[in-house]
Amino acid sequence: MQSSLKQQKGVSLVGLIIVLAALGFVGVLALKIVPTYTEYRAIQNAIVTAKATGGSVLEMQKSFDANATTGYISSITSHDLLIAKENGEFEISFAYEKKIPLVGPASLLLEYQGTTAKNGMPPPAKTDQ
Figure 1 (cartoon, one colour):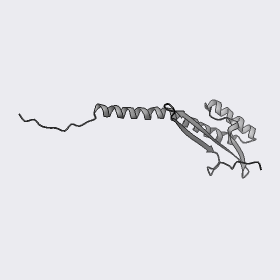
Figure 2: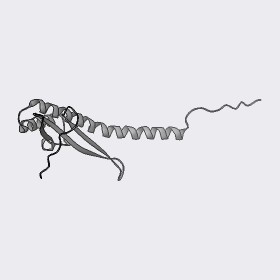
Figure 3: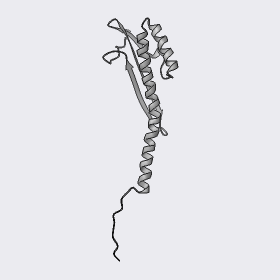
Figure 4: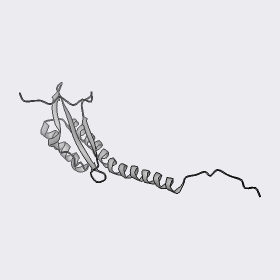
């Protein structure tokens, strides 16, 4: 009787558990991040709609508030928007942070910002001097 030594192929049970744990962690992280990104996109669309509404700053804020209600936007309000006139045209900008708790003291901080300016840069903040 000859015994043939074959090399085993495949993943061990420990390797499988490690891979599944890593995939589970990535999946849970995605489930926590995706809603914040969807809200960010809703805010982007709301400021574009508010700018298209035109008129005064108050009218643009009211338009944003209406879109915030229907778009489930809770991270910022119309008073958090920076509305400035640049080259004879209103530009609307925003910036906010979203903190997502992970495990224990560890958390993930996402910084979102956006503007309606064509160059992608928010108008400069006015300082009182």
